[in-house]
Length: 111
Image (cartoon, rainbow, N blue to C red; front, top):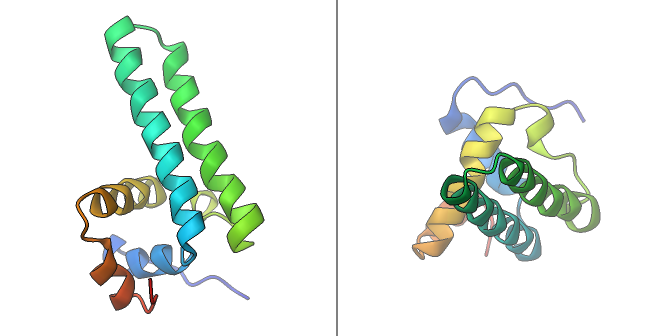
């Protein structure tokens, strides 16, 4: 199936959410995002650039694993790297704020 070309983040966002339709996929992403943010904060506090690499590894490991094992789709990172990163954190912070549900429903995802 050919992937549609998205010209704006607003067009990309519903696609991104549909690619993360399973709650377990989103949970894996939240774990990766939490670890990545923790590593980035530690990198700043300790002035250790290796922790930046650890942040990247942690974030992408959990995300890509969930796509391979749960969703069985290709991560959007490979086609839309910046928008995918922005969307990862948007999804994460909307979840933390308890505001992800309406976004999922608008994208056609029941929960």
